[in-house]
Length: 370
Image (tube, rainbow, N blue to C red; front, side):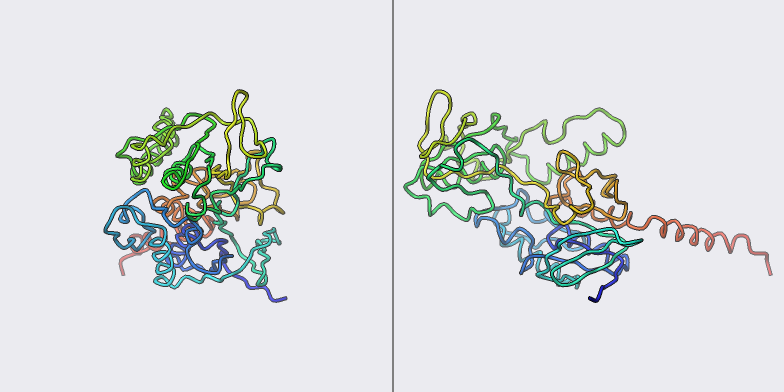
């Protein structure tokens, strides 16, 4: 079997992979982006139709090229898909799709990437597979015998199929609040959360969230007190549909239920009929391709220094959450982290280049007059 050799393999062709590709191309590295999706856009083509960004287009851009303006409010998911597709073409990024990456292993002084389309060897790998394809389903008593429909955020498209059914929405984050807002316009709902939902101030959007996360990271790096960042303000961004749901009195959450009955959910002192349960319970990093390297920590993440894996210095992780850089899972935030990752890929080469540049600068000053 032929093995292609490059400087860098990027795994994942969503927003994080494209941001890495921009800086890799600018730095002159030989690289390939392997994406397991049939079309451009990462997770965005798979989201529900009404999903919008938390920020205006001008604050939702990847490096190099601003997202085209969206005239009415925050851009919808389809606008993001068009932007990412055009971005990929604009910078002629070498994306191969659909290519499923099976595993990454150490092979001598390279990392070897085995895929459905062959093998690559690289001096470094940037893993940018995100979380969308690894939904988290909590385990509750009765989940297997519940007779209604259960679906996760990844399966939701619109509320039309739920008309005339009672829907229980589980989760205390943005997805849960947005889905509840939409579904409650079609049918009756119950909202349950582990802890009381915390709503951000009405004027806080994605740009402000990124600024807050960045300041917190700078404070921690400088040894200043931890202000708590975004978590100190709240969890749910008050986008227009959520504000409208609040005005309708829909955003009233109950404590988490104890389990599922055959036709609903129950607490110690009450039951609630349910035809549908929507689990808006978040995601885990999609890292199955790195399993052979045994890098995972007990919490499911991989220990990193910046973006570099502590146990495998040739591996960088990008776009999974704040543990891989402030705001690195967002359009507005991933560019800064992607640049840092590319800058740190080959520190030995960079040291040699800096020495060479210093020699060139010093040469004319020390050369004897002729």
